Amino acid sequence: MTSIPYDVFTEPEISPDTLANLGPLRRLAGTWQSDRGVDINPKAAGPERRVFREHIEMLPVDAQTNGPQLLYGLRYHIHINTAEEAITFHDQVGYWLWEPATGTIMQSLTIPRGQAVLAGGTAKVGDKRISVEARRGDTQFGICSNAFIEAAFRTDYYRIDITFNDDDSWTYVTRTDLAVRGKTPAFEHRDTNTLRRVAPAKPNPLAGLTSKAG
Image (cartoon, rainbow, N blue to C red; front, side, top):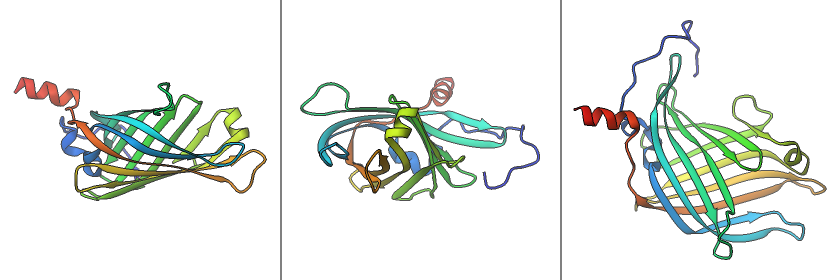
């Protein structure tokens, strides 16, 4: 929040319909797939390029409050593998959050390698492009890693840029600056993909109950 009110306990009224209140995140809701993702990652012999398959589910959650702060969001799960390997290449869970009062968007993410990120940015309803970023050491939008990652593949910066396309798809580019032990400068790890909808968005639990009651 840009300013903290004196009363940090009183909660605001919420809307039961998260989908109607996601602002610029509305177009992310649903289930998405693509088999044309591209990953550029560091290896001992030099950068490696891999094409990957991606499945993303974005589920609306009930509105959340921190006292007077009101957030609407999506809980997501990303699963990635490749044509060469059926095993998991990348797995990620987290939330996309929208704060209507300030125009703040946030992405919280966790991967099963012992790393978590909270990234933030600003956006407006109807924006066709949104971005969030985080930096190591930032206490608001930062990056937290286990001891091995800190020593061997330290993540100094994270950013994701999302573009909403006119055909109901969306394209992302992620940039992660990795300080690989023994190598300079930092490696600019990039991923990109264009996701296409395979299932519509589902209502959040409270919206579903409200609809049945009506």
